[in-house]
Image 1 (cartoon, rainbow, N blue to C red):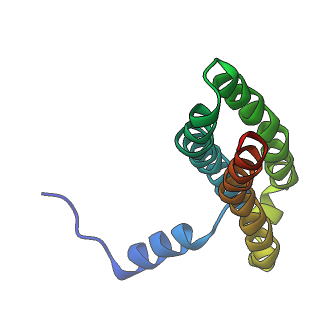
Image 2 (cartoon, rainbow, N blue to C red):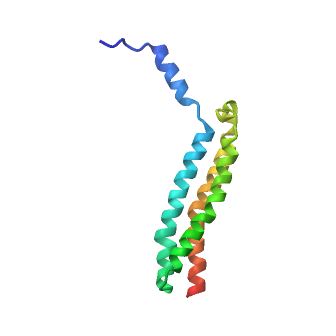
Image 3 (cartoon, helix red, strand yellow):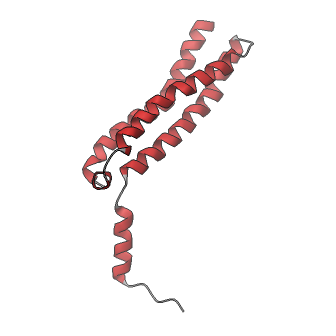
Length: 124
């Protein structure tokens, strides 16, 4: 039969989970933001372009726009990737992390919508 856990083991386990690695958290945010950005580009921007242009232009635009966002996402990730192990667990970096997180998600969500409006204005 397995040995029962002691209260000390549970506290130690919770403390280990409480340490947040800002590097991994930003990397996860970048990956998810790229997925959301690409999905919005496919379903919003390309559909809007297809209504006004009957060619491969919407698909070419999608490739260019997705390729264009990658350097911005890499910049966010690089800022956090180069932290030391001590810095990566520093709770004082939470506000800086939240600022970058908001900018990243704002870019991922708003850029496709703004581009759609821009393309609709041009092709309308």
